[in-house]
Amino acid sequence: MSRRIRMAGTLLAASALTMGALTGVASAQVDSGRAAAAKVDNPYAGAKVYVNPDWSAKAAAEPGGSKISNQPTGIWLDRIAAINGTGGAMGLRAHLDEALKQSGGSPTVVQLVVYDLPGRDCSALASNGELGPTEIDKYKTQFIDPIAAILSESKYANSNLRIVNTIEVDSLPNLVTNTGGRATATPQCDTMKANGNYVKGVGYALNKLGAIGNVYNYIDAGHHGWIGWDDNFNPTAQVIKQAATAEGSTVDKVAGIITNTANFSALKENNFTINDSVNGTTVRQSKWVDWNRYVDELSYAQAFRQELVNVGFPSNIGALIDTSRNGWGGSARPSGPGAKTDVDTYVNGGRYDRRIHVGNWCNQSGAGLGERPKAAPASGIDAYVWMKPPGESDGASSEIPNDEGKGFDRMCDPTYTGNARNGNNLSGALPNAPLSGHWFSAQFQELLKNAYPAL
Image (cartoon, rainbow, N blue to C red):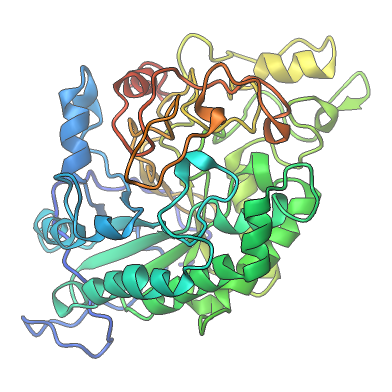
């Protein structure tokens, strides 16, 4: 049965499982003589999902954290050093070995975030990377090639592991929305569009990693509040197609897309739809929606998946939605639609997403854990995932010197009054945040408190 119509099924609770590296050659022999399983339509269906012991220990040490510390989260390979492990954190081989243990011989998904493009995150300083805009060769030989070499080892490649790669968060959408004279354009994004290294890097990663039999690549496709407008929607699909066919890759090396990675967009807004009107004024004209065609992540992910099929991707590609921080529960969650006084009162009174502006992305105040990881929850959706580990900061609230290549973005400063990308509104960020990827206890507690469904 196609995953497009498969009934929703809950991901099995992730019990510790070690992930072995995959062999990059389909014909490689497993030490035990057992061949890798054939690639499946939806890697999450009928599988466990790996629980990262590093994250789990931090979550369990927090008050109330044991309620979620057994949930599977993404492993962020966000610099070259992360491949072998940094600062006491496990490296890729250690995760794969632990995943094999957790698997108990059953199919088990390991979720990796491949995230170190040259000139990374050209519009967000908090997550700038270690490689300069022109260092595409270093990206290939010192980052992607070593990852592929580990995943290609027979111990991993011919195992029961299913390796899900989230490929380069935010990169390709930036080439559409933050270039070419737009109000949101940055010189850094114009540079990356001109030199082609985002497209080349993503294509190379897809080709190299996608050659491994038990690897499933999902390309990051932003979120509805970024790509949902008419002038962003199809152009982003076209750029993703361009990258998927660059550097020797083909669309067949793409299992699907992931949306809302490390973001906060509500999964489903139940109190209004894009087709509603108030006193003759469409919801699309509200300040919150602002002519977008989508009001939530589920409708956007399903539509964007179909758009990729329309531009030439296989009809059975899937989509993942990161629900790690988009619950928006707690006492501020509306219990019904807003008053029909005017369209803004109606939308603002009923929307679950309580951000000041949909463009706010850093350590958002009031956010909560969203839907728990789950396989095949809706048509076209392979899984809800927690790719961004809850409790890991998006960026520092003030400048912090570091050796990780991470800059200071004012969008992480709660006193910042904004820019064109968030309508010149307050950032909505929590105070006293550490560097991106570092543990942020206050945020973790906020996510627990505002979880929806509640814990």
